[in-house]
Length: 198
Image (cartoon, rainbow, N blue to C red; front, side, top):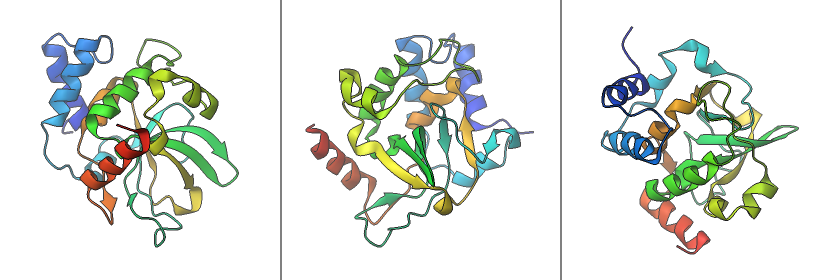
């Protein structure tokens, strides 16, 4: 079986002595390596390891999935391939932080803040982010989260959720997988900057 993009980048990183998520230097290495990739086929993420595909996302884990918003006709723009950390379940779905709404540099700053709320430093299947809306509002290191908070309805999810392992978070953060409709990513990011005063 061919290596996934995650496995290939981690293999190269380990060969270079970079252990995922362990240090600021290694995070920077994985982010910079991922940022050099050109456009990626979204569907390729779902063809590698079926054990990654789940129907119910867990709070504090990272996922990618396809989504068609209920109010798409009223929204100024939206992302049909979110990259999210769910942080609150609802009766009909969940709230999540979609990192795609920030330009890569601000994603990195937000992710660095989120790492402080990991339940352990193993960066394996046991690692989750301990987060809720109150914490997001209070923590100064998480001040870039506001444009990223979105509500998702289960009835409008168009695929399984693809689980992103914690040692892959920094890679996924910088992959060009945002798929905005109605506006370019540059316009979305400019709007997000305005919302957070940057």
